[in-house]
Image (cartoon, rainbow, N blue to C red; front, side, top):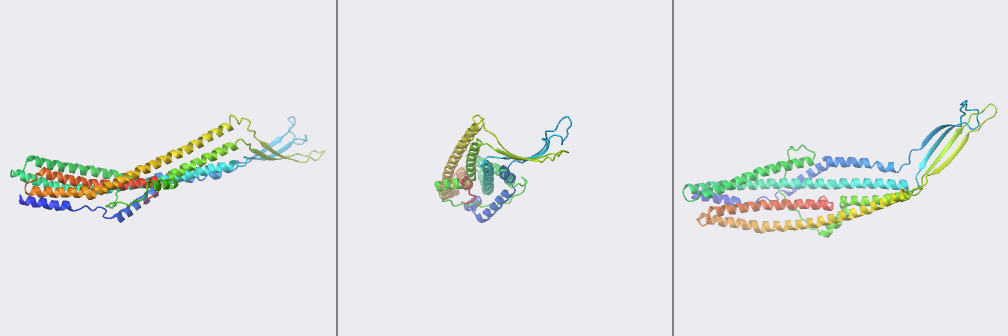
Length: 424
């Protein structure tokens, strides 16, 4: 059994080789930034929102413009017996021009309401960009995890294949039991299953990332491996204050509050009348007996809000309630964002603690335990199942290290979205 022991020892040396955690962070970040830029430029959802903004920006000038003037032509006082245009003194051919003028302040308020709609659309676009950037980061980090996990599983699979050979050799010469062989084969099959699962998850994540960048789902993607933990030294209060000032989602709700206030002011102005002013020119035909001069007239009319109790006052009450609703919606959203930031900070702190525990405690201890099991196995003081169990334990915690590191970076991307910042 000496050759097998030597082989096992060599495998153990390989197992002790630390994985390349954070091997190329600068290249990874450069690659990630390129994907984010491509998504922000080509994502259909973003392009749709950008087109919507262009349309909404055309509204304020329309809202602040007067109604079209009215031009009218008229025949006045034409006798029906002869239809003569020169027999009667009052027979005229008239042309009139009139214009409606809203009560002062109404057009300005309508323009302000339309401008607030533009601000809301712009905030929605910025919020969408943050969400897309977060989704790109989430998919990218998950792909990095899948690559690292796949490498670890394959490395462990190579070791397990050697374990199977050792178990079969010992069983063949009567120094082992069939259970050792079967257990090693089962663990090897589990590894094969995990590789299949990881490959499928990788394809799904690549398709999702391609979709965010408006590529074909099956398009090839080049991923730089090696996630490195980002430094993060902010307090919950700092992040909440930043979110209140910078988060596009909250900015949009603030604009809706201002819009509601302007709508309420406009409803108040509706209690005041609008004006119609006009000019009329009447041309008369001269008769053979006398010259008839033309007539010029001017007029002003106002609408009377006679039914204000059932109309204008009800409109004012409606807009007041809408303003109250907008204010409460903003408060509710701000509280929810603050809560999410607090929960996100808790997740980041938990992730940081777990990473320290795994890197400085569990993995070194698991390696020491495996080394001890190997030493005991070489002198027949430790059985094969114990050795195998120690190897599987180390393998699982190496995977867990990458899982926690990936989740930490995902939570950081979520925090960036929550506070309205693209990166820390």
